[in-house]
Image (tube, rainbow, N blue to C red; front, side):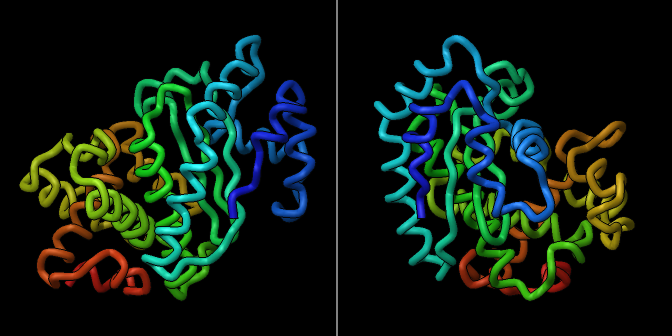
Length: 255
């Protein structure tokens, strides 16, 4: 279910806290400011003088209609839930977002999804982004483990499945660029030496994110790349599709 945030933005672009008031029921025990701060941390815009033009361009490019079309396909493909999807402009001043993600980002929960999109993003990029993020929603829905109980292995498989979904639907050219950082031999070695000893690290631990993102001394995007490697290896061995693996226990991918 696509929420027509284009209408929200036309009326209240300069007042993002007003927009976030409409999200208050979706975040338990969070204030409007806390919601906005959290969304900005993950790529949401901060108002600037060119912002309304950015919104106009996104409308002109039919972003909301594209996401409506794609969501229907993905729901049918993966028997996914009908959840609210919110689209906002991305933060044009976030240099890391621009350099590493071409100005786009997503934030997925079991019961809602946010997309942060730049006017530079192509239609296919947006479809691939939604594929990745909605796959997260489906994994969180179909896999019978509470997200609060996730450990590093669960996150590796979550990300590996989502990126494999992009490969399956759109091909290698729409994968995240860091998937080309390492050879299979390097990934196998890094899995054994740098990642596998920590697979039971809880999601709330600092070590979890340091391994996932490759901070501060690990190879860049280590966990993402290793997760994709593990899922791809399993898919090839089992001749499976991503849709068939949405409820597969994380531990299975290590066999």
